[in-house]
Image (cartoon, rainbow, N blue to C red; front, side):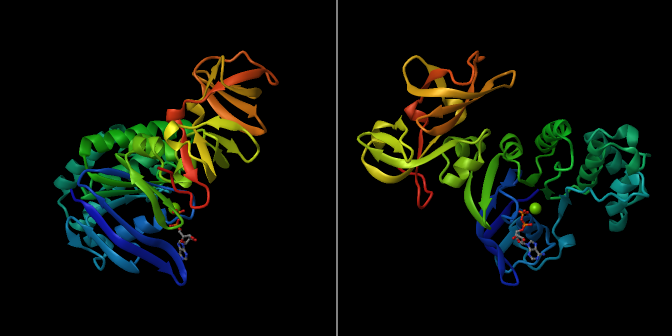
Length: 350
Ligand code: ADP
Ligand code: MG
């Protein structure tokens, strides 16, 4: 087990800067998710931690030791990739045993560790199968088992569930989380899927353009995004974001929709973007006038697209909606749930 600490870590590929001055401290046993759009530098950062990529600038330490120059095999980490990279001609047991054999462990030791890891990932009955005789989820479990047998100080995952279908992804998500709760090994998990990050991690690091946008507990990011980028990235469906200004104690969007703001933010101010999450809107008897544009029943709740004063708002309602397109409604906007951002810098106001 080990803590991982990055101080102003940078990565250049030639003149392309993939990672820009990233600093973070990951505690021993913590589960941290690195999340962000494709190309934002997640894999590069993870590969530098793994020792698969050189570090251009800054310091990386694992377990209190600076390891910038330590090769991958000296770092006591295990990595699980998206394409599990199993050896096709080896059985499940042989795949899991491979790294231990190279390490020179005894036959008995290897057998014991493989059996234990197989039990943890639920593959006890599949030890003699070949990868091609397994489902996608089972193959991903072999890849995890192969990491577990090594009993590393740190687990690194790079989008391990991306190749699985939606249902299996949700199931494996719970399995990885349960695995972490059981082993309590420091884990850094890369994903572009914010829901995966929200549901699994102790802490989320949101990356954008090689930089950290915000780092915090999942619900802290959800409740108080520090930038427009994080506001739009965390939460599904995405937060409604409307550019406009604060005038005469209200927000007025560029297209003319007036919305309430908290009293503390009522001072006139140009260049403000207004944010409200779909799930914070409701239908009320006296509120903001709107028309129903589209109703999507999801079973547990209903997603509704609303036209309000020239703007489109999405709402997620707990109640079933009998309304049809064109129907006039009133929307309740709780000012305590409103997020305000400076449009130009993208920073949160207050
Ligand atoms: P992510 O994993 O978040 O999708 P990556 O870390 O793979 O992003 O890539 C970050 C940036 O670095 C991208 O602009 C990508 O094109 C660039 N990049 C990644 N690997 C290489 C490489 N080996 N050579 C040159 N550029 C690279
Ligand atoms: Mg990647």
